[in-house]
Amino acid sequence: MSDTEQTPVLPFSELGLSDAVLKAVNQAGYETPSPIQAQSIAPLLEGRDLLGQAQTGTGKTAAFSLPLLSRIDVNAKTPQMLVLAPTRELAIQVAEAIQSYAKYMKGLHVLPVYGGQSMGIQLRQMQRNPQVIVGTPGRILDHIRRKTLKLGDLKSLVLDEADEMLRMGFIDDVETILKETPDNRQVALFSATMPGPIHRVATRYLKDPVEIRIKSKTTTMDTIDQRYWQVTGMHKLEALTRILEVEEFDAMIIFVRTKNATAELAEKLEARGYSSSPLNGDMNQAAREKAIQRMKKGQLDILVATDVAARGLDIERISHVINYDIPYDTESYVHRIGRTGRAGRTGTAILFVSPREKRMLFAIEKATRQPIEKMQLPSTEDIADRRVMQFTQMLSETIESQDLSFFQEVMAKYQESHDADPLEVAAALTYLVQKTRPLKPVVHVRPPRAEREQGSRRDNSNRSDRPSRERSPRRGNQDKPHRSEDGMQSYRIEVGRSHGVEVKNIVGAIANEAGIDSKDIGRISLQDDYSTLDLPEGMPKDLFQQLRKVWVCNKQLEISIVNSNDASAQPSDDNSRRKPRRSGKPRSRDRDASRRPRRGNND
Image (cartoon, rainbow, N blue to C red; front, side, top):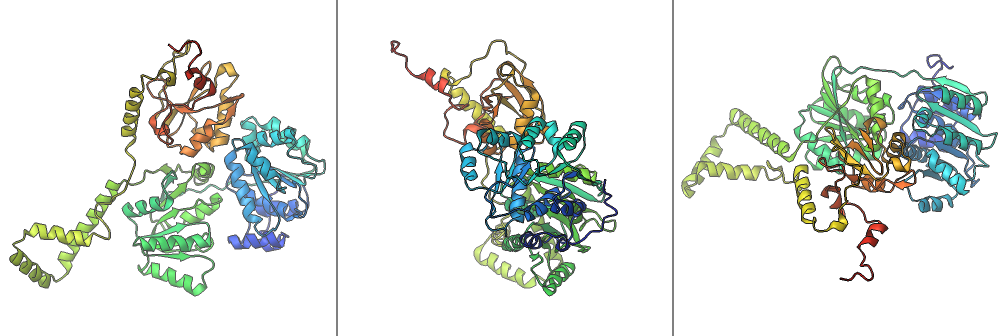
C-alpha cells in the first residue's frame, strides 16, 4: 500500500485535472490536496481501479470526484459515473459536492437518487439524461429493475463508505449492481475499515487496483472547550445572535464556506451592533492586513472568514471560534479552532451542525480525541439577564470615571420644576437609553414542551367521545409502557414481527432516510404488528412527515409519537398542530371506510 509520508504533495494545478474542474477547485479556495486526494487523483485519471482505506473527513469525495469528472464526456447523454453511498444524507452531500466541482462543465447533470423521494420526481429527472448519478443501493437497484437506469455506457463506479453499506445490509445489492455494469468500467472503493466481505468484493470486482491507506491523524485540543449546537427550526443567524449576546468573548472568528457568505454575514452582524469585518481571498492584501490590524488593536471584535483567508492567523485576542458552516473535512476543523487556545491560552470553539451533518461531527470527535458537548441556546431570560448586567456595569463605570456635575444640575432643575420622584426619572432615562437594545428582549416563542404536551392531553381527552379516531388496545400486546431515556423521544411504527421485520431493517431505514447515525437510534422493541423505538428529540417536521411514508417489509412506517405512559397512545399535539387536526394518526382507507354509514343500519 502507498505510504502517505513518501508521496510529494503537488498543487491541484499540476495534477492533470481538466480546465473546467480546476477552475471550480481554484474558486473554492483549495490550494493543495489532502493526502487521500494527492494519492488518488493521478491513478484515477489514468483509468486505474483504486482501493482506498480512509476515515470520514479526509477529503474522499474530492479524491474521486475531481479525476472522474475530468474524464466525463459532457456531449454523451448517458450515465457515465455512478456513486453508491450507504445513506440518503451522504448521497445528497456527495451529489452537492460533485455539482460544485462540475459547475463549469456545461451540459453536465448530476442526479441524487435515494429512497423516500418520489419515484415520479426521479423518473422526470432521469429524462434529463444525467451523466453522474449518486444514490443509495436499494433505490439504484430499483431503477435498474424498472429499466429506467441503464448502465451500458458506464465509465466509472465509486463505492463510498463500503463498510457502512456492509453494516447496513446493502452489500448484496451492491454486488448485484456491480454485475450490471460493463466489464471495462473503472471501480474505486473507499472504506474506513477493510472487513472480510469488503475485501472479497474488492478482490472479485477490482482489476489490479492501486491500494492506498491513509492513517488518520488524531489531535488533542486540551486548551479548547468544544461545543456544538444542532441546527433546528431556528434560523442560524438568530442562533448566532443569541450566542453572541451571552458569551464572554474578547475577539472572535466566525468561519463560513464561501467568500460571498463572509460579506453577507459580516454586514448582518454590523446591522445588529457588532463590530465585524469579512476576511476572504477576494480582498487585496492591504485590505486583509488592515482588518487584521484593527482586530489586534481592539477596533474590531469579529472576523467572518473562509478557511484559506484565515490560514496562519495568530491574534492573541481571539478567544472564540464559531464554525457557522461545518467544514468539509476534519483537518480544516482542526486548523479553524487552532486560531484560539494558542500558546497555552484557553479558548472556546462552537460548531453548528445540521442533522445530515452528524457524521462529520462524529469524525471530528474521533480526530480531536474529545467528545464535543451539545449546547443549549441561551433563552430570552438569559439574554435579558446578560443585558441588565452589562447595563449596570456600564452605569457603575460611568459614575466612577466621568464628571457628572453638569448633568446633576440638569436633573436637579427637572426634579424641582416637575416635583418628580428621582427613581422615576432614573427609570425614564434607562428606558430611553435601552430603546435600541432592549434590556428585556421581546421574542415570540412557542410554549414550553411541558405546556404543549399538557395542552395535547387536554385536546385528546376532549376527543374521547370519538371512538373511531382512537386506537383500540390490541390483544396479546399489552406490554409494559415504553419509557424513553433523557434526550430521546419514543415513537411507534406500524410494522412488527408478523410482517417479517427485524431490528436491522428498522435501523437501516431510519438511518438511510433520516440521516441519523445508527449509534443515535435508541431502544427498539418489536411487537406482533407494531414496534416502538427511541430517536433523538427535536425531529424537524419535514423529516417526521418523510419518515411516515418510508416502506419497510412492504409496510409504511406511519411513525407517530408515543405517550410515555402508554405504548399504544396517539401522537401528541406536537405533531398534529402542524396541519389542521384530523386525528393523532393519518386516516387510512380502512379507517375512513369504517366511519361511513352502513346500509341498513341507519338507526
